Image (cartoon, rainbow, N blue to C red; front, side, top):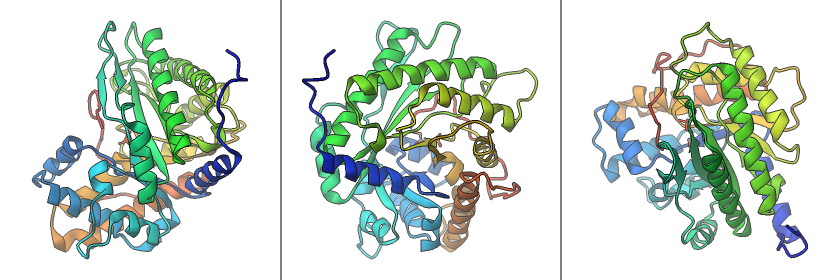
Length: 365
Ligand code: 13P
């Protein structure tokens, strides 16, 4: 393919995107993923016996976003869901403005969910390209500066297939290119699910292959890498693996090796998903990753959903009188992960979720 006919971004747009990506991965900071769809948010609320109504979802998000501005010491950005991006707090201030005032950058999930990939053994791709350009332009005008799109790859004896790796890498690259043209930094999320009984080595090999497809596709679509973030899984054995225990140091080494072999140094940062690890494991593994004695040219930090919210939900239980306690849980976890992103977490910060395993089979977001 000749690059001579490609349409590249204007220089000013590149500068703007690189600046947003840099602020999102500033030292000691990471991202809060609060972009659960209506049904996923419903499952979280159901766990604490709160009904899944629009008002209850709004109340929960208000709890998160009205946390003391101390939160912004460790949270650089928040990923919203479309419904949330248009909601306001009880005083009428939009959530976007509320976050901006705290110095937290609002982001948004722009994919429309996982669908089956025909002709494969139960593999999938992600929809949402139709109308994406217009949605991105609207979000940018509302004050949103980054986006997320999640693709899912599955480890079984015969998967991920070439077809699934190719298709998911390509759709993520098309999404990334559209976002950048609208001035949004794309978070590229090709998640290799933790479901399965595979060992660490298999997880590393598959993650490497998936990332190799990903960066070839991003190059093919002329995506400006300095204005992107990668959101990968950490390399861990499968959830049903029954072999000897794997240490955080072993997972961290395998993770950094996989990244070093596939992710260009130009990429602004890597923001891991928590993928069903308990809050404390997600923090300890991130800390170990930031202590691996290998070259690490990118910021390595967090973009956690479950591992930042489990204790908040457990403390809240839907009750007004518990809001302050729940917000303290959020600050506590954000601080712990902020330290881990610098490799300085000492361990032992327990939350109201008490080390609960957050794994969800075949997780949808
Ligand atoms: P978890 O941290 O709960 O895996 O989710 C992060 C996310 O944004 C998945 O798309």
